[in-house]
Amino acid sequence: MGVLTQNMPHRDDGPTRLVRPVPAAPIQQSSADPLAVLPAKVRQFVERAVTLCQPDRVHVCDGSEAENAALLRQMQAVGMIEPLPKYDNCWLARTDPADVARVESKTFIVTEQKREAVPIPGKGVRGTLGNWMSPEDLEEAVADRFPGCMRGRTLYVVPFSMGPVGSPLSKIGIELTDSPYVVASMRIMTRMGGKVLETLGDGDFVKCLHSVGLPEPVTGPSGIRWPCNPAKTLIAHVPERREILSFGSGYGGNSLLGKKCFALRIGSTIARREGWLAEHMLILGITNPAGHKRYIAAAFPSACGKTNLAMLQPSLPGYKVECVGDDIAWMRFDKNGVLRAINPENGFFGVAPGTSSTTNPVAMATVASNTIFTNVARTADGGVYWEGLEKEVDTSAGVTDWQGRPWTPGSGAPSAHPNSRFCAPAGQCPIIDPQWESAEGVPISAILFGGRRPEGVPLVYEAFNWEHGVLLGAAMR
Image (cartoon, rainbow, N blue to C red; front, side):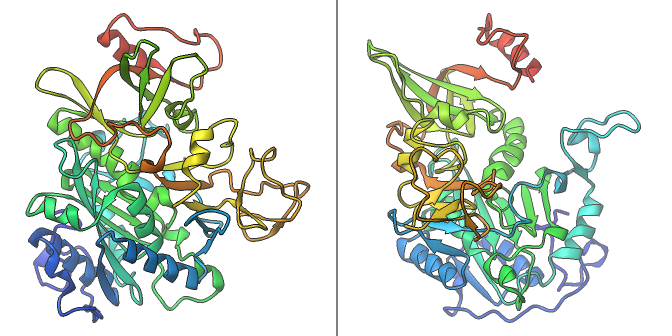
């Protein structure tokens, strides 16, 4: 049975029970039945998670401005975020120093057979292409972590669509989380709210369960401002059941389960079954001086310039670049044999250090409003600062680093964490492509592959055909 789709332990179902029986916690409800708006399958998923995690309250997110404002005020009240008055509706979050990045060593693919998930290296060799976990080990890990993990907290039901709502290329997920930071960020990164539930109806969806892993009451300011449980962090994917479980981390790469977890890991397994592609690629449109427009996709490793290329401002006269997406592409051949792509995301979750008006002026304009910054530094006038902004931000009045400590250029340490991030709506990008939310996707004319290799190969070379291109892309490192 799937981890989240089987009956939870308050029922006596014999040997298939996942964890030891635990009593259901009472739920404070804002209405007679807050789950009444949920389709039957979603409600069943939520009820099982409630029994397992035992939250005090359940809130079904509608994605409204009022709901978002209330969440931001709630986080501000406990010190999880603070406003940045220099900008319009921008906020700064500082995480626990032990919760600052994706934890690949604690990220697993769960299948019956190891060979289904990762290559099996020779004896004594540790593989580098992913981590595998058996279903039995996952059940044990869940039993050790999730029972009662949301006591004292609110379980937020986040319905979201990867891709434009209603597009034949899009997929729907439901994330259950006890983190308001996750809810506010998912509202930026995905299409989230009641319209998604209406579109879903009784259809299937990807089940996502997330907890910061620290039930209340907690002691110490760090646990209140940024609850997490690094010692027991676990991110698990169950492709066969289309399920994702994340425990112990509030950092976006581990908790915004629509991103890498859904859009690439689970998405790629769905794509394999259904005959399409889920790829770690940007999508952009290029128009030449004659007015002819082409769309391209491009795959580079992380921190190799996907965002900068997606937001390129051409120096060649008459050329124009427009951005569809900077990180993930879902591609499928249409009935006419045209390869079409959508950006399944709704926002940008970019690395801040190195971004500036020189390296990426479009990104700087994009993040000037409605953005959540995480682990960047803060200037005395309520602005942001990170390495790369030395020429455009005056730090003489004072800077507070990502850990809340006074900082100067002579401090001997970075002001912002190297993996500090901005989370900004894609729709406010100045060069967003007019077709970026097209339900049928944009037609792809070329695919670029890039790597980190600094020498020994030409800077740019072209494949003879699509088959040769697949070979070149697969052989690149």
